[in-house]
Length: 85
Image 1 (cartoon, rainbow, N blue to C red):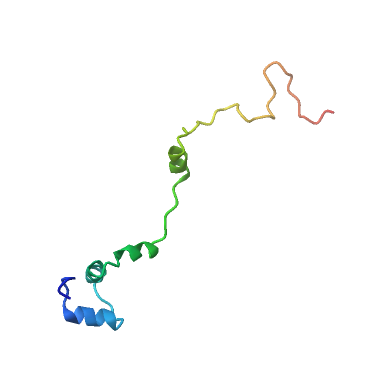
Image 2: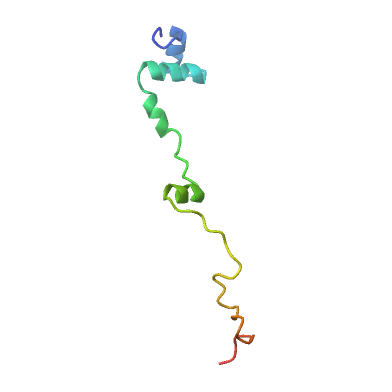
């Protein structure tokens, strides 16, 4: 109890499975050098797609109006429904 800065009653409550304040629980974990195990309680939040691109050293590309639109005719081609064979 002294190393953690909590009372003997708090230690007794923890040992018997009763609830305690989070701060006291953390103090006991630090005193017992078990705080590294806390990482297993909190799931890792995946990076956003933008963070993944930045980490890879790539720059985001802005969408443009014409790229990728195969269905639009070029300026010099006559317009058609695309059904003519």
